[in-house]
Image 1 (cartoon, rainbow, N blue to C red):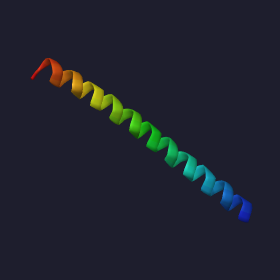
Image 2 (image 1 turned 60 degrees about the vertical axis):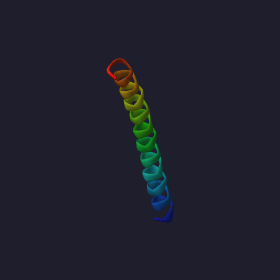
Image 3 (image 1 turned 135 degrees about the vertical axis):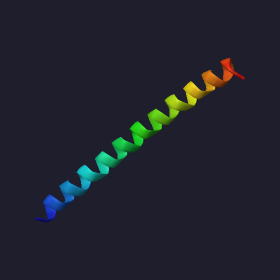
Length: 42
């Protein structure tokens, strides 16, 4: 039972770290896009 909980917690932490990674990737893409837009349209 305890090992099951440990696996469950590890899966949740992995899921959240993956979400944070995807979020950072999206923010980088949005920042890059906005930079281009504001560069061409001042």
